[in-house]
Amino acid sequence: MPIVSHGVILVATVNSIGAVFQLVYVILFIVYAEKAKKVKMTGFLLAVFGVFAIIVIVSLKVLDNHMRQMFVVCLSVVSLISMFASPLFIIKLVVRTRSIEFMPFYLSLSTFLMSISFFVYGVLKEDGFIFVPNGIGTLLGVAQLSLFAFYSRTCREDRREALIASYA
Image (cartoon, rainbow, N blue to C red; front, top):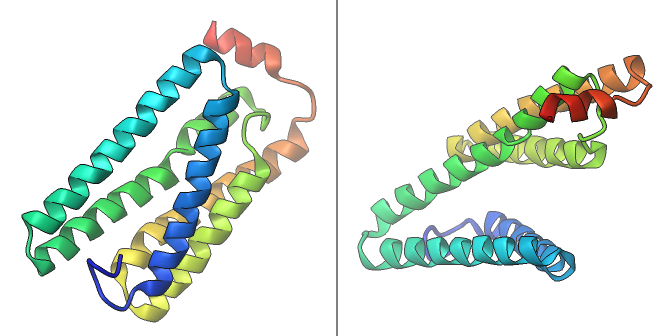
């Protein structure tokens, strides 16, 4: 954010818009979910807001400007890498079941396109904190899309029975 580091208005704008979209998605999920999931997701959402508030308070009240930048950058890099690594669970499931049933193509494609665009932006800006995690995201996106292409051509039949048996 501009209060943490000056000259990053483009990154702050894109990430703020993404955060609003995610918030709308989570709220829609909560509205239409079953009661048990509604309560659980509301708790998660409140926990995320609580952690965010603690991060803001600590970074603004305790840390000086340089330490605030490093603190926020490190948190951002860790959260970005964890976001890109989360599809590894799906990749494992795809390889084990030999089915792409639970790997949404458009999510994989959009994550790849976003990663590669921010990777290029980070390289052009010579900002390792942007291009390193997005480079990792690009490689993971290539892996997802490659798996999607491979298993969509080789395994046409429904593997739901194998999936159900593997979790039973």
